[in-house]
Amino acid sequence: MSDNQLLETIEKYLNGGMTKEERARFEILRNENPDINDKVAEHKHFTGLIKQYGERLELEKRLDAIHKEIDVEALEDEFMIHPSGIVRLWRNHHSKISVAASIAIFAVLCTLFFTGYLSNRESNYIQLRDVVNKTVKTVNQLKNTVNGMKQRSNPGDFRGTGFAITANGLIATNYHVIENADSVYVQNAAGKSFKAKVLLSEPANDVAILKIVDTSFRNLEPIPYTLKRAESDLAESVYTYGYAQDSPVYGDGKLTSANGLSGDSLDYQISIPINPGNSGGPLLDSRGNVIGIIQAKQSLMEGVHFAVKASYLLNAVDSLDKKVSLNNKNILANLNTVQQVKKLKNYIFMVKVYGK
Amino acid sequence: MSKESNNGIPTDSEVILGILNNSESVLKRLYVAYFPMVLQLIINNNGDGDEAKDIYQEAIIILYNKVKTGDFELSSKLKTYIYSVCRRLWLKRLSQMNRYGGDIKDFQEYLSVDDETEKNNERDIQFNKMGDALKLLGEPCKTIIEDFYINNRSMQDICDSFGYTNADNAKTQKYKCLQRLKKLFFQQ
Image 1 (cartoon, one colour):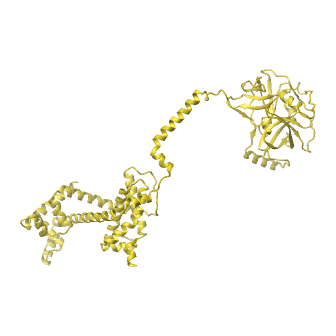
Image 2 (cartoon, rainbow over the protein chains, first blue to last red):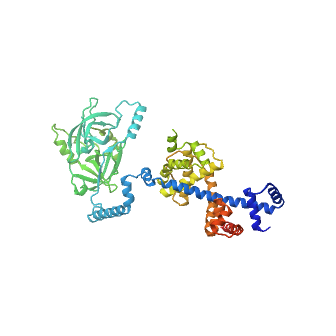
Image 3 (cartoon, one colour):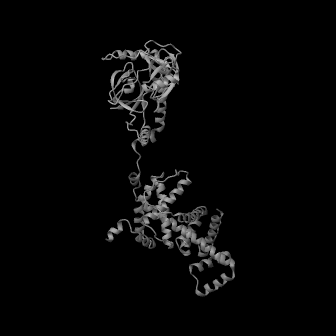
């Protein structure tokens, strides 16, 4: 039997075109002859595959025909999640926008460079009024509760330092410390607060004078220091003492210039490490004379600070309606710094300001 | 009532019965019912309308074959099944094209349908090989094979339309064609 004929027989067998006897005979042949058996299986599989392939093509044609009746574009419009206008604008024009932005930035930088804006000739200035954050408040409240202290524990919205200039409760500080104040309290070294009112403020010179009006306030011991009207000399040793934090802080340095920022004759320039909260504190020389009020620091140069000269404070005191007799007996002059600071303690106050 | 069911979305059991009975209208209603859902999935995930058509038809064919071979079990809504198959196929396509950005916007709930798409993939490879082999085979062999094995025409019919002088010649020709087709198919 040739291959051709064998194939025909196999097809006849698979199609069921054989008579019963033929079929029985072929099955015997198939069982005895594994070669033929393989051929039958192989042919069945292969023609089956052709048939399935045909059916698949047919099905695809049917699906395509159905698909043609669907308006795909209308559906696409309906289902597309349209990005917002700005996103579309960016997608369509992002290269142009990027170039434009680069040019704009470059132009701005060039302008700043050529106009000298980028050089730091005019350095900024930070006033040392301390913005007390909430954490500190909470911590203080806790501390005070634990200690069972009765007095007012709120440290205020802003904080600075002030110092007594008379035993009956006149306090000098910076105007910027009490600026916009609704109420002002001063707290002494023992932690006791007294209500104070602003007696005089001189924004131009950044000087303010407070008066303690609290009924619980008892007059202080005589003021141990004097205010020095004459201008001090360069390189003098100076120090300050104030509430840069919750406990008083001592800091010392030198008087480095008789003029402040940009030659401003209101200020001394000093090299004392001071911090927010120091504002309004006294600047003393080594003999215990108050020569200024700590005012501000320069933001760009480290260790450069300013203090308002005491002569401006004296002028302010002179301008008060009620005549004030200032202390003119300096009892600190012959003491060393440690002893001076010990004496000072009771005359330096934390100024607590509550905003409007 | 019957009119309504002839136009709207077919019920799941209608679809199964319709496929088993080769109903053209059920196939059409099925196709029209769920294509928008798949289109929405594809065009909002880096694809276009033509790709949606490819994916959707592949899913319909998978469903169709499963129903025909009797191993389709409706364990969820048909809608969910179709969506899940399409989602799976599209993720595979996206990663093949390196267009997969790592996330896909979904519009329906879905199931995990891994193995079904794999099985279909193997069959597709066989069909592609068959298609290529038939193309290489050329005429008149291609038509003879298609007429006899796909369209079930008799040898006598084929003999007549090709103008063979007798059926034996046609048979010999068919035999030669089949041998060549096998060779082309297995060579690939």
